[in-house]
Image 1 (cartoon, rainbow, N blue to C red):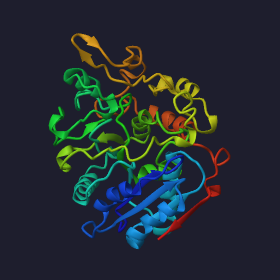
Image 2 (tube, one colour; image 1 turned 30 degrees about the vertical axis):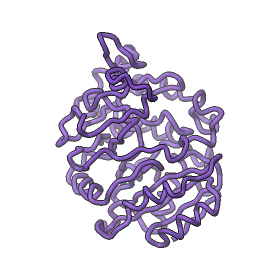
Image 3 (spheres, rainbow, N blue to C red; image 1 turned 90 degrees about the vertical axis):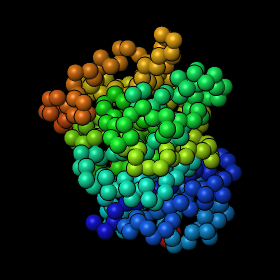
Image 4 (cartoon, rainbow, N blue to C red; image 1 turned 60 degrees about the vertical axis):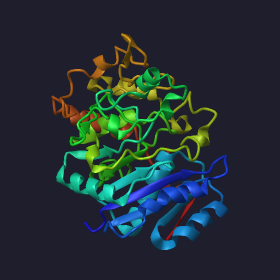
Length: 356
């Protein structure tokens, strides 16, 4: 396939003055001719015309530009951006999600691409960020532990996590098994996933936060893996700066208490429907997938010892069901439960435009 990777850089200007210079700084490392078959698209929701025009003036036709006028979650705007790009340019082998404070250099992307096409088990890969990773404790030190050990006053999600401190072997992928998660600042998803889930990459029932725990289950249900990249493929963890606010500013008043877009779905009912298949997610104010983080003999995280009982014994070390027949049951449930139907939300009615 001549279209190898589509990189979508996501921004949102709802309720604030956009940091356009910050956006440009994150887009610039993605520009170049070193990676044939790569296309970059700036996807924005709710920013003013002057800010968007400044980005177009800087990059012009070097990248594509996709703008959503409606106030919508990043999961929907990202999905819609990818759909529009596929409509114009054809399908890509892989799709890259970058949040606004994140970027990655082209050489690292090339190395990851070569590794991905050689490992067909992987459908989604996380590239770790320099903070706010929320990764398993055998991959890297948890931010809560770093905070206690260093007597750091900063909020946990802003504490620096670097490649040099990684516990896991940098030459190996880390399989995020069902029940594990890592934060979605930079991730890459396969075209196979895109087609399996009705031309969508992110579950669109969510307003913003809370989605990360679903990805390993989505991967397992199509007999594929959700992994953290072998970090020898990247020079350093990707940056994660606070260029703008959270991804759910369209829903700022409700973002901590209601994670569901338009209150269309009930996340607790979704959990109960597939719990017999080992499915479990975080819930508002209940971060049930937090790992156990021990300090001086005490757990300092939101770890709930009853949660692992939901999925223990159902999956092997590669993240697959021990009883493969469960895959279809989980896939059928998640296809319906984690993605909005066309009747619930019609992507064709989004107020958007695309520039090249």
